[in-house]
Image 1 (tube, one colour):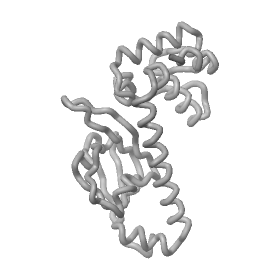
Image 2 (image 1 turned 180 degrees about the vertical axis):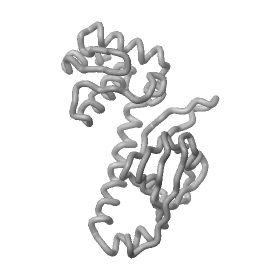
Image 3 (image 1 turned 135 degrees about the vertical axis):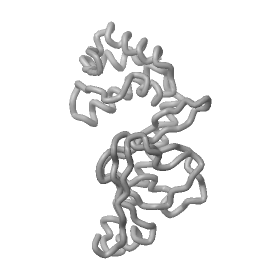
Image 4 (image 1 turned 120 degrees about the horizontal axis):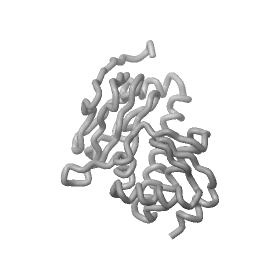
Length: 201
């Protein structure tokens, strides 16, 4: 990093990093905190579709191609610090270490795969399938059958573009069927086979 110019930016909780319709051609890496990615559904309703955690590069697809405005709004979930570089500085890092270049290519590939999965989930899956897949994905990622959410049920429902009562109803069906156990913000998967069975249309 001593070979390139960079700066540090600080955001307070709820500060807007970038809004829908804007461009962001900087290479910004989350050093601390978290950025939440939301898409406007109209009538002031937003759906959370992802987040940038510590170590993640924000809006990677726009760094070298900013012709298309962003279709999302990104805000700080908590006090957040970003390391900012210009596209030229990032390109210089590519030349200094090819591992950085390869990691960037892998990141763009993962973004494309994630977007394809999101489109499939939002358009083809039933509510039960969406919720079951989400629970399995989160527990697998955290390597635990028990997860405690740090967001509200409403925010989780927004991620699936469904109503909160629909989420509550499905979770209740899974619990009554013996697939999960709920206690406050904590959910434990008890039987994955039952979860798959209950999620089927």
